[in-house]
Amino acid sequence: MPWLLLDAGNTAIKWAHSDAEGNRFIGTGIELRLNNEPLADRLATAWRLPRATRAFGCSVADDVTRQAIEAAARDAAGIDVTWLAAQPHFAGVGPGYGLALINAYRDPEQLGADRWHAMIAACAKYPGESLVIASGGTATTVDCVRAESGGASVFVGGLIAPGADLMLASLARGTARLPLAEGRVQAHPDNTDDAIASGVHKAQLGLIERATREFAAELLAEGHAPPRLLVTGGRARVLLVELGRALTGEALIAPVTMEDNLVLKGVALRAHAEIASAATAVAT
Image 1 (cartoon, rainbow, N blue to C red):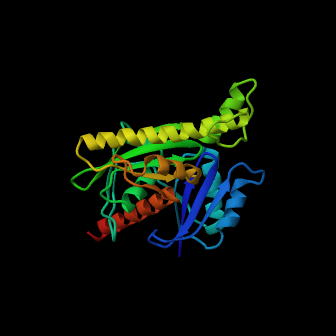
Image 2 (spheres, one colour):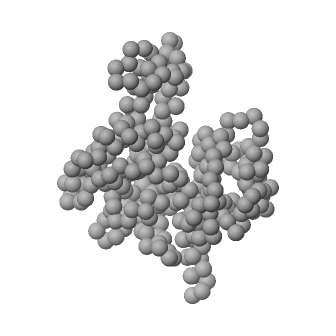
Image 3 (cartoon, rainbow, N blue to C red):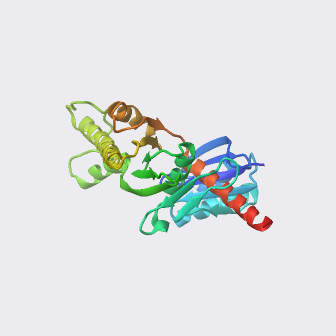
């Protein structure tokens, strides 16, 4: 019977059903919070089949949203949600899990749970590589993970900025004459809507490019291999082509790769590791 995996964000709830080990996704979905129909009812309808036996999730959403998710899981499958926060470190156990990830945040539990679980999944897929994980959603985050010689990976820090939609909305709210633009990205915009759309798009690209270049230069100076850039989140496809064009092929940068559902995959890995660890402790 499957698990229900959850990623509760600021504007959407993403989910997937997986096998009992949390390895194989057998169905994914996204539910926007901005809808007149009650959220708990919509989610319960979506989750009745297949009927999950366990539910694990991470959340950066408000308490009302979390309560709606918990009510939907009970209604759909009679199960509670186990919420997973960021940790000081993650040590994977069990088949295929030899991952050690250290959280160097000053207060590790302050780190967003979505960012932490995306890093777990990224490090599991690309073991031994330094990584930059750029997520384009309500906020745009850029997190740097250094691969150490002893086999562990260290999250050294990251950036948070408004996402593209927040940038567009802030211009419309904070100025008297600028619209909520629906323009197109152009090399040389000749109208206000295109100028706003192009400026916001290039601001997003510039944030990710600069963070990646700076981390790559730091690694090179220390004798390490360059990082791989992973792009994820709702705007990943919009960013991927231009980031790849700007960065791929440079001596400082390893490949640029798009990854879907990193947060959900990280939640699955974390849940499986904790269950395996608890079983090992009981057995000994």
